[in-house]
Image (tube, rainbow over all chains, first blue to last red; front, side, top):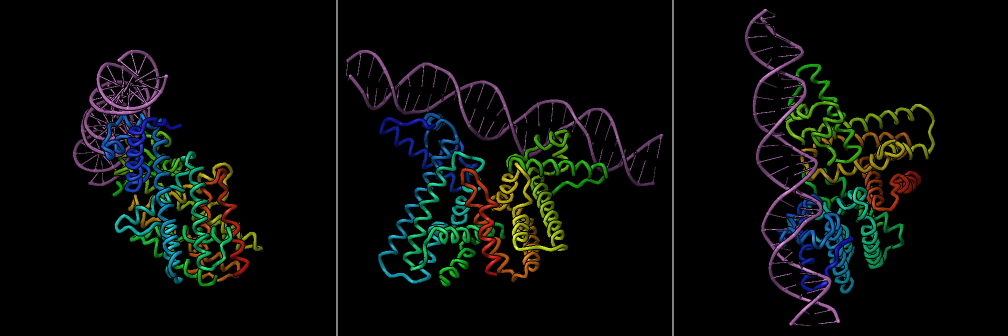
Length: 197
Length: 197
DNA sequence: GCTACTTTGGCACGACCGTACCAGTTTTTC
DNA sequence: GAAAAACTGGTACGGTCGTGCCAAAGTAGC
């Protein structure tokens, strides 16, 4: 298990390391999370990484959780934002895309989407991520369901999972294009789905 | 580019290395393909791997292609097999699953499926795989289309891609379960799709 | 059978990597 | 304010990796 920090300053340092690791994850994937890279990014000595985390896997797990929580709270924010005012069909489609792929972030967009799917594919080889991934997936399903309700569409679990699968499948297959635009590929089936109810 | 072998014996050795690399890929994913591991598996000296392949990426590309071609020819075989005799709905569903996930191979099944999806997700980080992946995906689409025709179902490109996305999405999401059974998860939407036409 | 080219395979270099160690410092606890 | 606990940070070890090197062995063309 992860060594806990029992001092406020210690906890702050720990968080700096987690944030640095999460940044690296977003930029270069799982392989970019290494003790030395994390320490350098956080501007802390190498040994601090092994002091606050029992192993590299602990650090990786913390980074994945950090990033996942950020994504989910950003998704929640976007949803609440739209729930307040008016909304037409296409705004809801974009919201669903934001929930599933993240809010478009300029040049880093593909990287960010890629990491979302690397998480799935790497989980069988890093089983310690599985419970975390399941918890986050469940929360995401809830957000999707809420959005569907907002759209007046059926929001039972089967529909939600169907929608997610449709998007994920399109995205994965878009990754091998010469100029991948997963968001565009995912939009089409989403539109059809919301149209037909 | 890959150093060519210009002697029959050299070509044989080269193939041994490719086969060994493909084996390792199937057992431990991309990270398992390393010069030393490949050489040992092929029972050849380390230096032979750098003699026949200019870089590790060349070796990886050859392994991915080797494995992909095997999968496609196995798929073609299964399709022709079924095309001859009679076939009911559920046999066709299983054939589609075989085409998309491989023929179930006992205890190695999950690993084998995992590699199929690791290929997609790793392609943005290994751009040299992209053309190869696109070519193989196109061939797979053809096989799926033929199968749909066999089922008397519409087989236009949009339908084929929709079906593939549905399966891929289910599979990817199944990977984080505690006892992943991607094939079972993918079967359900496939049944519905073939039922509704 | 001689020359040129290909192949072989042992070896080592330099670069990373995860992790352990530990003397020193700071912070907390009582 | 002293004892204990938490933290700091420089350093080093043992391991693995991709790749280059090169003398020896094999093979092909003439």
